[in-house]
Image (cartoon, rainbow, N blue to C red; front, top):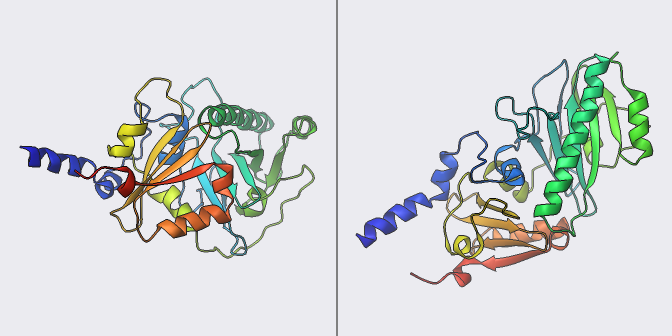
Length: 304
């Protein structure tokens, strides 16, 4: 009986099976806003289909030691911003290198002037939500630069007056007009200026860092109930912080990422990926900015 229970628990906590069974549907019963964003909304490959006559990609420049994660916000019948009365933009990118942490909110619109003004409001609404969520759930030491991109076809009626008003208050929304597939990497990897103009570039994709592959492809839709879970996770309505498991490339080991307003903890067994993960986080200055502590599950968990 005890062995059967142990077998059932092992099957329940099988990270490879959890990832295989993962559904593309947000889970508000078990995850908060940021967790749903990180677990279900990433766009591997950073390329999006055409909408309102425009589309784009973000090709990571091979010359930079960086990660860039694209998130789909307006998920049609399963949107991240659930209140139908609130405006919501299409996408958001998060660019990280050793010096920068830039969140760029991207809205795709057609040529209609009123629609473009609504696009500005959609960008501003997500910015407000993100600022509140991040201040409640991630280390306060992390500083993020927010900006927006309004992607439209040529000959669209850009609301320049509204964009200038926002710029005078320190928030830049860059209007980009392009009829083909725009390359947005140069405009999500730096702080934009209102005077910037779109210049189309063909960029050779670099090999993504291991941590970018992990963050974009292997977030688990269920939490593994191990010793770390028992010690750190509390089920409550207004729970603070994030708690997510990620499968490692060997399809056996996994890491636990948990964070609050003071620090971030990465819980991981000794395996071939440890040093690579630590080195990449160090190179991106994330150990400092996210106040990361590493714990070894083999040490922190008792033997059963």
